[in-house]
Image (cartoon, rainbow, N blue to C red; front, side, top):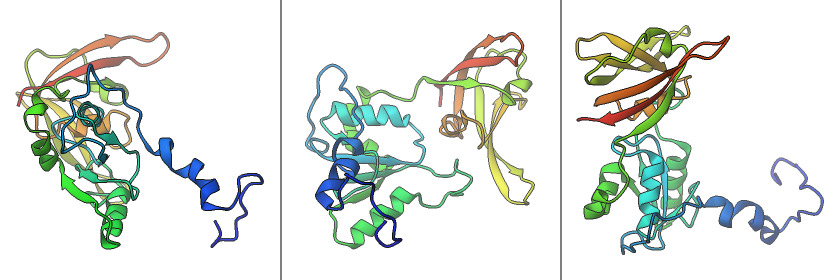
Length: 235
């Protein structure tokens, strides 16, 4: 704001001390209550973890819960207090196209400045969880809503397992954008999710997996139907 000549609001002060209440502390942390008791683990206790991208084996919420259960701290953004940045896939984000997120780039900048910050893959994170991953919440039951336009293709939920698969769709501006489809074992496309749909990031986490999908259809008066769905990973 100083560099661009933008004045600070009256009463908020210009000092770093005055700004600390706005930009640091509790606002930078995710307040996740531990499940049952905290089981402190030296690899996690009092260390701050930040996640970026979509994880393949766990939802981000469940991974953050696992950190809390082991005595760790979940951060919203990368700061000098961050100890670990866990990098998932950014392929789901059409704007990033698999490149590094802003959190990732900031973490690299802090590393170059000499900050003691570790950038690790989700597989290394699972190794850190070790035996405790058995007690940690898993991505076995992902809940999401299937709405228009994906539910246009769904007449009823077939019995059996479905495959989640990424396909490429040619956009109007001639750029290839990914789309995730749920296919029956016979190859019939049950639903398709584009990056503009709310459930896309959840479905992208299932890419390459075989799932057991259960869904309840809801018919809304005067509007399109939707499905409340649960996906259980088979393999």
